[in-house]
Image (tube, rainbow, N blue to C red; front, side, top):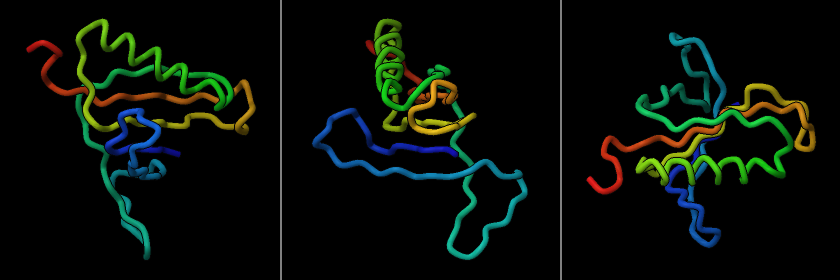
Length: 108
C-alpha cells in the first residue's frame, strides 16, 4: 500500500490531499473506477521505519531534521510505502518514508 500526501507541510490545521495506491505491473490497465499512475521520479530523502504507527511521525520528523541540517529542500509531496504490515500496533511493520526533494538546496 502506498500513501502519497499532497500539499502537506505538517501543519495540523492546514487541509491536504492523500492519494492511495498499490504497486502494479508497469503495463497494468485500469479497471472501472480506478486509475493507473506512475509516481514521479526524482531525488528522495528516504528512511525505513520499523514499528507501530504510533511512532512513525517521530521517524518522519527525524528524517526532516536531517534534511534541513543538510540543506535539502522538500517538495510538497511526502510518501509512505508500506512494505510489510501486521497491524497498527505491531512492532514488525516496515514502512519506507520518502520526502520528494526539490532540485535546488536551501540557500541556493
